[in-house]
Length: 206
Image (cartoon, rainbow, N blue to C red):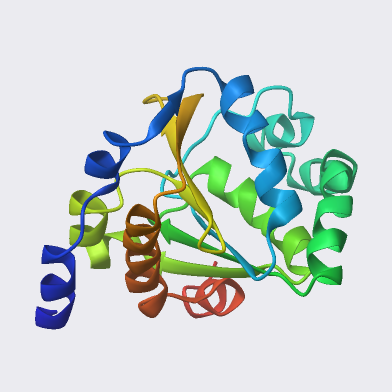
């Protein structure tokens, strides 16, 4: 814990970093900035998701999960996720590692139960997914990792801006190498105390 606190003391939080980054004030503008990042990435994509609920408009699969129709939700997922297959295949062909970390609070929300089914789909395409107990690493998420973010190699990073309901409002972008390194260090702290998601599910009887 002392080592973690020492490392944290030398890092800026995502909130502090965002003050110095370019902001895109609609989801459309924000996500349009990702196209070049996905096309140009050569080595790795790092993704942190922090929320237990997100708003996923138009997802019939999620609607079925919330209704308790788990089988229907699972059956609908491949169709809804088909648009991601080309992206995953592109990353695989370039030998790009896609690593996702995800703090989890128990008991699971309906959203996270649904998202886990999506992770099973992602894992088929070599995405590396890690879970950790948020409340056991509370200080990291209360002090440093206050937002979701993504990092593409050491070239560009994005911080996501969600409202309290998990609705994406827009986000920030940076190509500043120091800010990107800061985010990489935060991600590294989180991953160092995480477990492969399927193992996490197993040992927590989920």
